Length: 165
Image 1 (cartoon, rainbow, N blue to C red):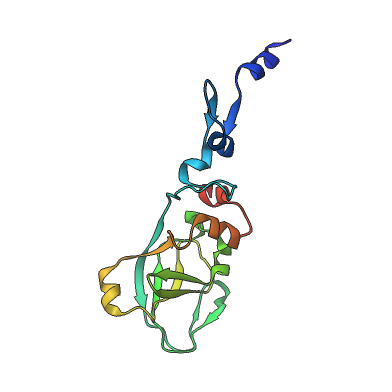
Image 2: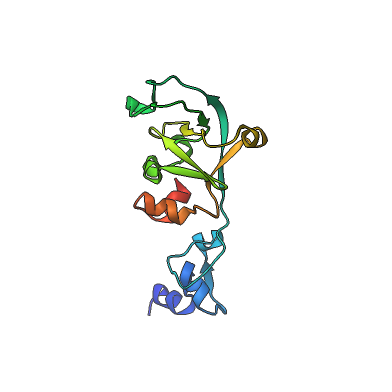
């Protein structure tokens, strides 16, 4: 028996789900992403601990016919109140988040317009009352209504990739 075999017998290293399912006595564990409330087991309920808010950098009132985003993929067709949020793919926000189509602020839906750019996303704040906008300076991207698991699903990936990008 060599040192490698002896080490395997003496120490069992657990990760994420194994840490939660097994009683760990005299073992080494690496809880990993489970520390943040994410595991790939629907039978284990953990509180997700990550929230992400994007600051509102600008509020703009574009003219009908103007376009938004890379390749001008969104065209303004009605009177609109745009919000420019300070988060983009350079900050780790996946470009595939466009599949989500909207953010939420309380009861209000906030459509994402155009593509995610390097440092910003543009949203339609038309349904948000000005009084509420005067009271806030951030819009939630990840919270208890839309988790990293939801974002990972929308981006056809796993929560770990969303957290580490």
